Image (tube, rainbow, N blue to C red):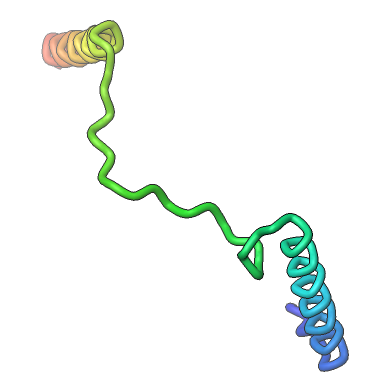
Length: 83
């Protein structure tokens, strides 16, 4: 069962949050930052292009797929011959 915070816990959390904001503002004033609250990193602007794969990586993936296809075909032939 989930325990919900009491009213006293919520008041204490609010006091702590206000104190953190106050200290953050004080720190920003000392460091010359204009932001009142520390913010998360901003997302990049612009569209990212498609990921590029090296020719070696493409060949490695293709070889692995050919190996899987060969195994699949080999398994089908052996089950058809047995049945």
